[in-house]
Length: 139
Image (cartoon, rainbow, N blue to C red; front, side, top):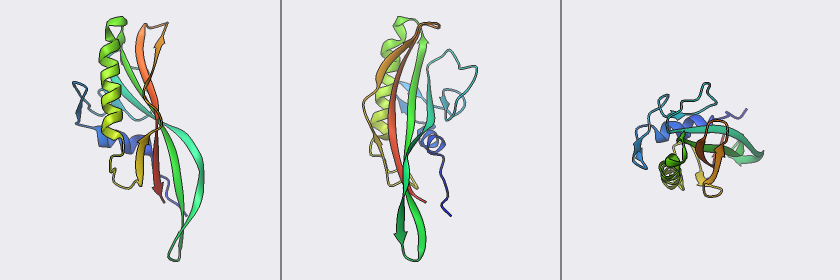
């Protein structure tokens, strides 16, 4: 039976302690691998498991396995106000650049599906950038 990984958690572990975009990322401070409430109003990174395509059979020797192609949504939340735009964008681009084709232990590959896209939350006036990452592994 295949062992399912938690790609959002694994990528957060890879990012933990890294200085990217002028910010040092720290788990449970400004780096989260799941939905969290209340969300901090400060600049932070959120990684969410977002599905993926169906596993494909993968045979290596006598043990049946599967090839998993998962999707992780990356969201970089800036502080409220328009002045936070540049800082959030810089962090989002730095995280994507760091993870793009990085050799993450236990994964065949990690690649960005696209570049970070901007959105804002009209209720909180927060600036944010989001993109999806593909994390592929055999399990």
